[in-house]
Image (cartoon, rainbow, N blue to C red; front, side, top):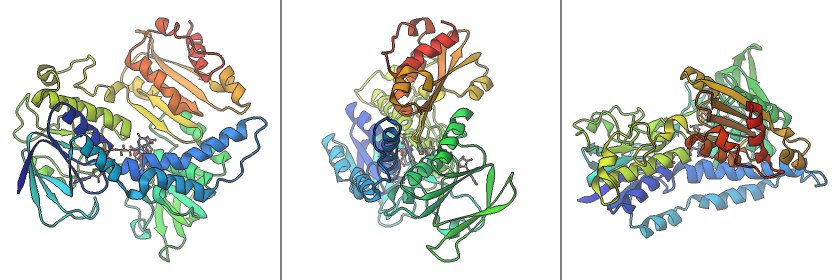
Length: 494
Ligand SMILES: Cc1cc2nc3c(=O)[nH]c(=O)nc-3n(C[C@H](O)[C@H](O)[C@H](O)COP(=O)(O)OP(=O)(O)OC[C@H]3O[C@@H](n4cnc5c(N)ncnc54)[C@H](O)[C@@H]3O)c2cc1C
Ligand SMILES: NC(=O)c1ccc[n+]([C@@H]2O[C@H](COP(=O)([O-])OP(=O)(O)OC[C@H]3O[C@@H](n4cnc5c(N)ncnc54)[C@H](O)[C@@H]3O)[C@@H](O)[C@H]2O)c1
């Protein structure tokens, strides 16, 4: 049987849910297809559980740094894990299902794949990355299909690694007990956050990174996080490559043989977490049926319309993609931003929800609700280590490569009165990149406690291109860490 909707969304993670919601607000009928849990990776095995695991360690650090507060001592592991379970609903997505129903969106459970223009086949699914087969039914889209199937972890081709049955981020965020020791392979965001969380929870952690930590961030940020992890007892090994992995007994200790600047060596742990990146989940969504290459990211325009779709008519795109599946962003917040654009473009082109001409036109260089322009110069990142790292826009190296005339200004946060009153040990740094011709901030990095919360002022300055002379009149309260803005402007010469 074939059912018809205006819009079909494949993948009900945070991104698919948002695209569906925006299209439905534009008066279109919408069905979302979900193979596993409504809410996606973020709700059950990524953002929510990882941040819930990390918060108690951050709170303990604040207590330790404050004069006169007794050291809270070790964390209550079972209470932390119970809170994590509460936040993930232990895999019960009925609340999200109810929400979809409340906004008039139809949920179709199963594995969705394209089988031609505006056509989606749905088969029963046992797990999102399993081969999905079985009785099929068809959905037809009058207007558009959105692919928001997210991403899956990459397990690199290191001899013995896959056979050792390592943890990926799913097992690390869903663990029911804390192993005595954990080896983490990969010095990116997952590696750093999970090394922090498991060290907080009492595991002996070794972090193996090919280069420095947090390669996408400013180098000083990775260095500060490495210093803090070492101070917390984590064995951080930089510049090492995993050569071989052995786990003689299933569930027993696992040994990684590494090579690096200090020569070869081995590291053994009760568990091994692989945190070496993710790939867009496009291997089994029927891309070949519309002239696209399965397994590759879905390359999108700023309107989120997918490029290179067979038979596409200019001005009437029907296939859209947003979130991790595009390979363009790797965070929930940037994916949801794209989803808002996707839903609004579709509603404007095909529904009653906006200005179709504006949605079809090239947005040029201006800000338009029909273009995910912030993906380029104003993307935001947060890493919930202790200290937190947060940045917006390009790093200094990226800005220089792009030929931007940037001047870098930085301030040690420990010297700001608002930081000093909280702790004599306050460790943090802020750096901004100023376009010295236009005298506007084009990028900023904050490292320190609550950096993720402090980032948004910088994001507003970047997106709104606030001239430094105007920013001077945004007076930060005393004594707050926000006085970093005053110190930065003074350091620039105001
Ligand atoms: C450990 C970890 C921590 C993270 N922490 C943060 C954080 O703090 N902040 C942040 O912004 N980002 C964080 N991220 C990144 C964030 O999780 C992703 O960017 C986000 O989940 C992407 O959302 P999405 O909807 O594109 O994909 P997903 O959340 O992966 O959702 C995709 C959905 O599509 C479904 N699906 C896939 N294929 C099909 C199919 N063929 N048919 C039907 N359904 C299908 C899946 O079941 C899933 O529900 C973290 C990632 C990890 C791994
Ligand atoms: N707070 C957040 O927003 C948050 C938290 C966690 C994850 N995420 C997102 O999830 C995605 C995945 O994170 P991730 O940390 O897995 O990826 P990543 O790309 O951030 O880091 C991967 C790391 O693995 C290393 N690596 C790759 N291959 C390797 C190999 N063979 N041996 C050793 N090291 C290797 C890389 O050098 C890099 O340091 C990213 O898009 C990230 O932004 C976001």
